[in-house]
Amino acid sequence: MSTPTARRASNALDVVVAFFRLDAIDELSYPMSMMFRFLAPLMSVIVYFFQADFLGRPDSYGATLVGISLAVSLQLALTGCGNRLQQLQERGNLEPVLVEPVSWWVIPVTMNMWQTLAGVVTMCLMLGTGVLLGADLQVSGLLPFLLILALGLIACNAVGILSASLIVLAKRSQAILGLYGLAASLLGGALFSIEVLPEWLRALSYLVPHAYVISAARDVLVPGGAGAGMPLGVAVTGLVIFDLIVFPLALYAFTKALEYSRTMGLLGGY
Image 1 (cartoon, rainbow, N blue to C red):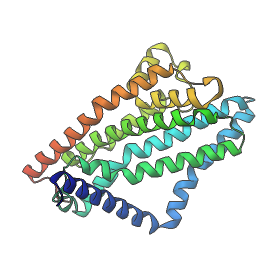
Image 2: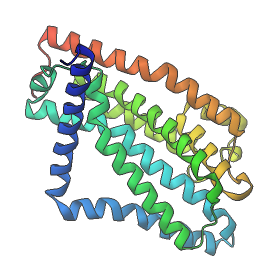
Image 3: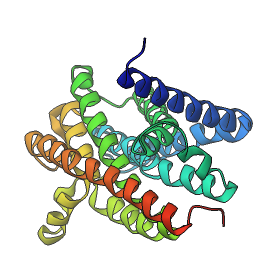
Image 4: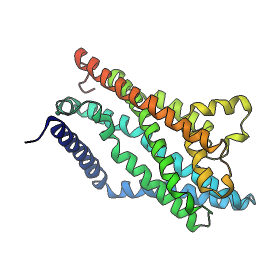
């Protein structure tokens, strides 16, 4: 006889499988689109390889490769939940999802699993292509890099879930994510170390999780930690603190937004 906890776990797993299956069907229905989605980021890997060679700085290619590949992965983790939620609202399918016998905090996590995985696969393809082109990365740093990546994906999922809470209430959140994306592109240090920024602007980098992830990843993957920008201990500690505070807060905000919207009748389609 199954216990209530076991039933809840089984129901949550069913929801995870269902969302994953729906996303897989959507992707596989348009194979050319899926292929270009994975191939397009590889062009930037090739472009920055020739750029580093043209500037006479081939030693900087590894740091740039780590930065741009992580930026792509984190961006997909950041936007996946909001995109899926908006799609459910447009199709009028959000209400049926909410009647599933699972806690509502499970929903935003499962909605973003495919996009998060797609971002990780894309990042691996970019790093692999860069290594084939001659990027010098430390294999010994792979395990700590995976831990850093996991912390970064949790952080971006948290920001994405907060954004999704606004979609539930206002149907739109592109302006917030757009602003965050601009801040992350400048302050995250994907193309350069944050050390080159003015001191007052560099201080703002500590507000953007991208900066912690990219800095820590360069510290463990790039020989000599080139382009790290901040001490490894500071970067990892910052990510852990961010995840422990913002992720639960994001889940709470999302469930409260659903409760309010359901009460006010705002969950229907457009």
